[in-house]
Image 1 (cartoon, rainbow, N blue to C red):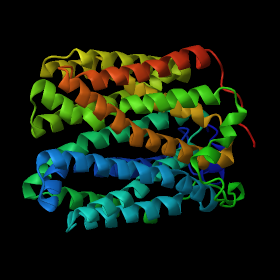
Image 2: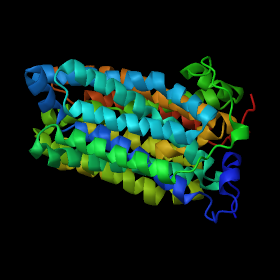
Image 3: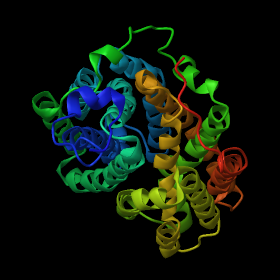
Image 4: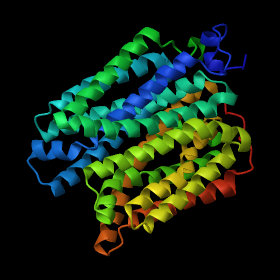
Length: 423
């Protein structure tokens, strides 16, 4: 039997786990990640119509409002990430995941019947809190997998995220024919079913003797990363990760506006293109991530992913036809290696009892990027369009990804991660 993470041994040893991970835990947690991502993506095709109907606004104003909704979603994730991560370290992963998924179901049911824009903002705020389950989910996956299999399992998590971006926009577009409320109700139903599955089938992955008291001083993004700063590799890797997160937000923040300005695409074409991006991501992270990391290691895989992403962003600056967009992402799809490779590297820099806090902190840092990046990238897009350069947002994304690439090559490549801190 492959040795599992110490946190998981009390649950998993003797239960036939011979592949380096607990299949039941991994399957259910990945389903939660998938459903959460579908809930985010399913909104994209119908949100403009819903805002215009509820707010009685035109498309221009609806676009601005949707940007604020994205911001409030990310802002709430920022505050909720370390809190949920630390709650997972205190009470276990299972109750946090179940509570988040039940709240997610109730929230989307509420948003389906929102009478005013204010209700939409409340709904997006709640969705942001429940969307912070990535910290506890990542910690549960770390609990339930051996060190040798952890990067592969994190790759599957990235694949679930990518698959959610395939199914979400596609499902939203199909269900929109029944009205803008239908996608929200579908997301609520999926979340409720997943919560029931967790209640019935999901075991706890964190041993009681490894739990620690909840401390509000730890439940913030700075203290969540405190264990990392005992390792000299932590700071540059965190900076590189943040730069990459800023850059990768160019897709959800500007893709629909950029593709409309560059290619004249309508909502259907935009939805299919987003689905294609998700398909490539899921394919790479499911089929390619594990073998590549096993062959070249996590650090080199991170370099390959960052180089691919930087190249893709630069290529989009000069794209002039719709088929170019598909070809670029197909060729540069190895950028999907970046997330699981860097997440796995970071997971090695914290001890067993701080995995939840670490992953919650990473989730909060991602949320900071999700707050800042749309403002940066949409302003770059607007300025570029005004000057006849609609690729300006992708040029900025390329610069940010290039910074991350330089940092990883300079500071991380070739250095073995230090042992986890016990602080």
